[in-house]
Length: 114
Image 1 (spheres, rainbow, N blue to C red):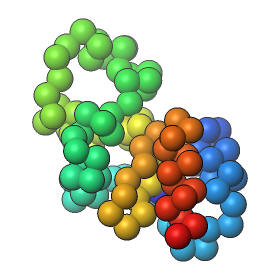
Image 2 (cartoon, rainbow, N blue to C red):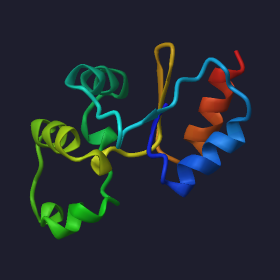
Image 3 (cartoon, rainbow, N blue to C red):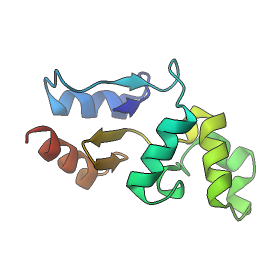
Image 4 (tube, rainbow, N blue to C red):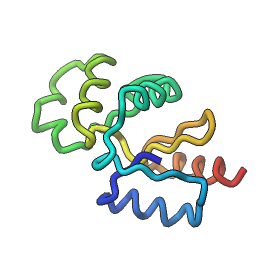
């Protein structure tokens, strides 16, 4: 699980998942995402855009909301600034769950209990 340890939503989701000894939790602030990790996430997700958080403060402050971004733009932005990754991102086998919507959380729970 790629998450931000200071994020209250990530903390809540980790709490909801309960004891998961096989779940590796990676704090993206102290362990930056590598190009390889991001490329693997995008492969599972179908695009870099699906991994991109438009809720990040810098999205508007940098005027990105007024630009038409490409897949390469999304990739470079996420690699350059950890807050652009939609959180949490959980990978279980060949499945990826992105963000904090109930569907993603329920999918994560189901995948971890298999």
